[in-house]
Length: 228
Ligand SMILES: O=C(O)[C@@H](CO)OP(=O)(O)O
Image 1 (tube, protein in one colour):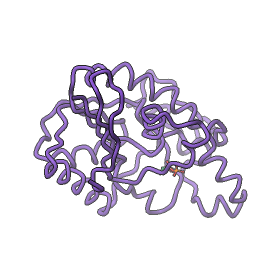
Image 2: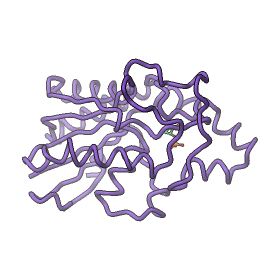
Image 3: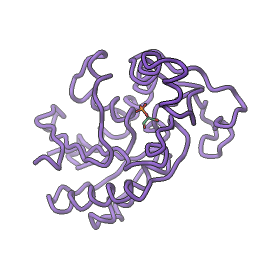
Image 4: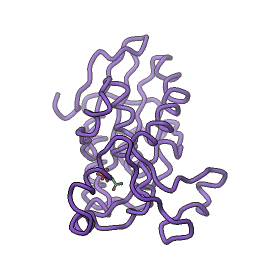
């Protein structure tokens, strides 16, 4: 039966520092690496072993995937990296301290920027420190200047449908290592969560979420692997 494993990257350096991250490429902390290892060990213990992997083009998700697959003893499985699984682009907030930004603009405004469904943060000016449009990994891609959750869904979901669903339809166990907001996009679709409710859903770092599916990809069960 098809099975989908979703895992948010382990703690990143900017999760630790409480900074808006988005598309900025930061590494994992030691704790983040340990979370990734624990996720892989859990997959091995429970014998839930993916045969194919998908991740973003961001170091924290790629490393989480590799550390987890190595701990599970299956670092060799095929993997695909795609920018459509990237974190939501945080626009002009990228790099800022979340608490300082709340002190400056008010908690309510920051909550809207972080969790509203379709209000994007302010745009990131072209040529500013965190502008990634000349990064070679984004060659030929129109790098956004900001994204709401709705914008993130608009690129992550078609990617899921076009590139991941065919493997699920063939009965594979698929792992996706990605980010808080790109995974929200997938969970919203898979669990049929409304635009309002999805904004309240927090996805913890390094915790595999399992979707068990029927052959027609109807979800039959969803659970955190650590809770079973
Ligand atoms: O900074 C970010 O890119 C994300 C994920 O860490 O933060 P938020 O919790 O605001 O979606």
